[in-house]
Length: 460
Image 1 (cartoon, rainbow, N blue to C red):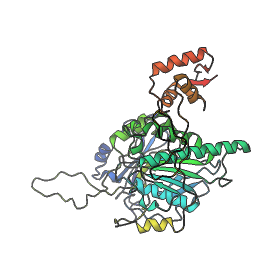
Image 2: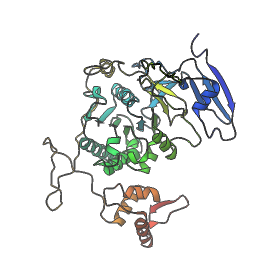
Image 3: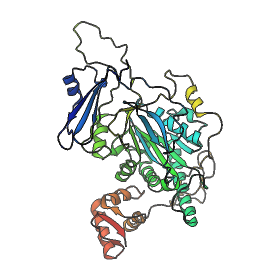
Image 4: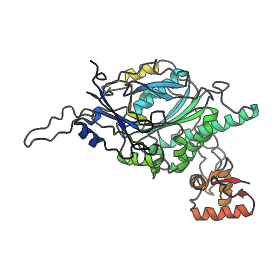
């Protein structure tokens, strides 16, 4: 008999609103199960919850991913894994109804399987003719097999900033071109290809103290806000799961949670942040993902030697798809690549990428021109290797009033969003009181309108 045939299932009736407090270890004790990974708890609809007890964890063994899995289906999705009950785990690559690119973020602690999950996305893009520009901020070590399989590959924070500026410039070029055509949406390959900027180890670029933090958050937010409708998407893989290590931007987090958000094994800090930032619905609970599957809780007898032979991390790829229809159902990615390490590139992953050049042309990275002694910029700048580079994005307005008007030019903002935008535009930091005073002055000058019932401030 299969493990699923030996599964026990319990349907729990809950109070209105569902389960508010849930202790997985206590539930396992009640069911007299010593291996917590065998017990799957899932909040049902209405006033029901389901508890399933398996003889072994149903996600303990996963098959290898195939090219058939990575073929984009009619819904714009690829099949990257399986839920514990066998339903396919899908990741959306693009929206076939609108042609829009996606906003994707993959969270997880070290060793949770982020890079292998990202490899599946990169392989699918190459096979489908989607252009990818990649920044691998672990000096190129996270996804080394992507070398030669993406249009652009950079490995330093400085290069990643050049990449982000170039992606924003490309999105702006497309917006202007489509406006002249009278086109409000994106059509793949007519004339432009679907394009993604991918930042692996994004926490290195966005964490507190990172040299380009404020500008990086602003550029990523801009790509998420305007790039998707012109076919320029953004994908982040990050160890962080709390706001301070994602650029400190409420707007950025709000933007990403409307896309594809996948959570692999997490820390307690990460979980608290997910709930606090609204990435996990209020009242919902996630069963913890253990580092080691099948490890039973036992009392060690005095004087006996513990058997540690099987205590190796083996839950890589287990995850929750927080923005799917099943945010609290445990799933796992299919195996991407070899189980054993290799002295060079993983041959299984390289074979999945396939031969041939990647779609698209390398981006010309954009760097700000070096400042002269008077603080000005040169007419033409060069990067470290001597290549000519394009002009940078225009600097933020110097006055608070000008910065407020610039931030509101793209549309209405709440007070919280406006303050975040001002503190990410590259200018001097602004406190809430100073901002409110200037908004009052602009209102008297009839340059902005007061906040409406929804709390939005707009240009007059």
